[in-house]
Amino acid sequence: MAAPLNQVFFPSTFQELFSAWGRFPGAVPYAGGTGIIRGQGRQTLELPPVILSLDKLEDLQRISRSERYLEIGAMVKLSQIIRLGKIVPEALSRCLENIAGAQLRNIATIGGNICYPAERLDASAAFTALDAQYELRSAQSSRWISASRFSSLPGPTALNPQELLTRVRVPLDQWNYSVYKKFSGSPPGSGCGVVVFLVKNQKNALTDIRVVYKTAAILRDKNSEAILAGKQLPLSRRVAAEFVENWEIFLSGIQNLDELSQKELLNFIELNVYNLTE
Ligand SMILES: Cc1cc2nc3c(=O)[nH]c(=O)nc-3n(C[C@H](O)[C@H](O)[C@H](O)COP(=O)(O)OP(=O)(O)OC[C@H]3O[C@@H](n4cnc5c(N)ncnc54)[C@H](O)[C@@H]3O)c2cc1C
View 1 (cartoon, rainbow, N blue to C red):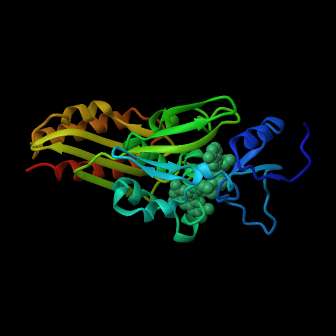
View 2: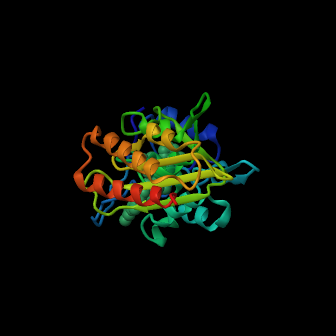
View 3: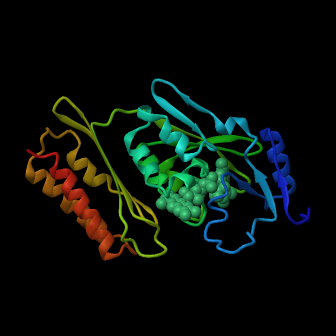
């Protein structure tokens, strides 16, 4: 059906949403709108001709918690998540606190940050490191996909046509060492470099380590992580050096990663892994 200009739908059920989307396949979901109007400095904003406002879908506003998971609806604002306080894994709250200013965080939603089609945004690094899962829903079905897979699929987004992100499930693991850093020196077009460094230990043994770096893509080197898994803490300096060397080799094989980003990341990794030595 040809769309008359500037139609806005306000569905309050998924059935209404997918029915409108079926009639106007090019319609664009509208969450906080900060991504959709990003970079428009003009007086008159340009909006997609057909908009599906997600405002009235109550399911997307829900936050729930079980012993093992925190579940966050796609329409929950970044600032609402931060305000949940201690229950939010530190890597995630630090990541969200570092996104733009407070006013933007009061409008921007977690779903919009994940689904922004032009580039990978910051939350994808924290969700990948924390092993989060995304629930995606279409007219006929729903499916779960890991944050890691969602962010690594080629193309502007891993969403199928007329598919909606409905919620994020974040495991509530206890991380003994959790560091988040945002670099400022990334070249234009590659997105800001952000990195998450997580370590879990049981008594004196390191049981899990994850280092996830995001620029234009998400980088994680499981071979390097395997060097440390199971090692006694504090780590020996030899093992720490091996970890850094492995990352260096891994990064040298990554195309389009500029020298400055590479250096900043290696310095960060070195500093943090040596924090785990005697
Ligand atoms: C000044 C400024 C500074 C910023 N700085 C940062 C920063 O430092 N770090 C960072 O990570 N980001 C940054 N951003 C980007 C910002 O985080 C995103 O614009 C925001 O998270 C998008 O959320 P939204 O709710 O406004 O999404 P919208 O603008 O409404 O949507 C963004 C895209 O996602 C799609 N979408 C939204 N929700 C869903 C859903 N549930 N299912 C399927 N598709 C959906 C929309 O169709 C659209 O294509 C900045 C933006 C601005 C304007």
